[in-house]
Length: 79
Image 1: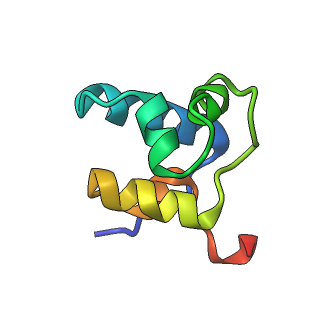
Image 2 (image 1 turned 90 degrees about the vertical axis):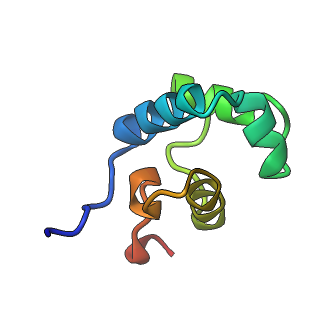
């Protein structure tokens, strides 16, 4: 099986929105889980926030949803 490549920002936003709907969790609740203001991930999902999520945020979301962190854009060379 071929490894998942790091996702681009548009793919990350779509993945985040889809997983939130699938798991019936709000972006506001996820933002609070990341210890960010409640609108943080909503802004990110609209493309109005940061270009990409911080590595630790990607990892926390991946753990919460039980998916590969690369779906949220994780790349070793970003650090």
